[in-house]
Image (cartoon, rainbow, N blue to C red):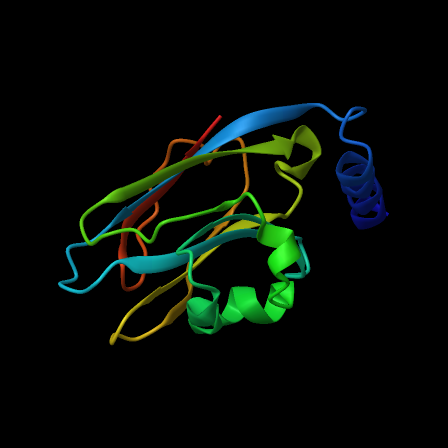
Length: 156
């Protein structure tokens, strides 16, 4: 029943954004000095069952490289229409990406996760480099990535 109510609240928030209370959430990703070219990153949201909800940002403008962001590519279906207006340049080693996304209050503490896939040219891909629960208590707490991300935080 709790899952059904959470799904109903989120679907209402996504379908009728004017009816739901949303907050700007700042997502900050700092890369390690991994010694390679700029990284492509996909920041996206999944629900409590792990199903794709939406893309928040894609760093890297050449869509031919999106296949290397494999978990995101598979989940989102690679539909370019879903990411129009939420893309930017790749992120250089040792640099930070800071973006803001509006997220409905109903998404917090409801089992949703913020995920980041990462890839760098001529280096290994890193699907689900970061996967962190979207909770109010987790805001501002840095999370270390597996390969390219030195730390990731989100702030309310």
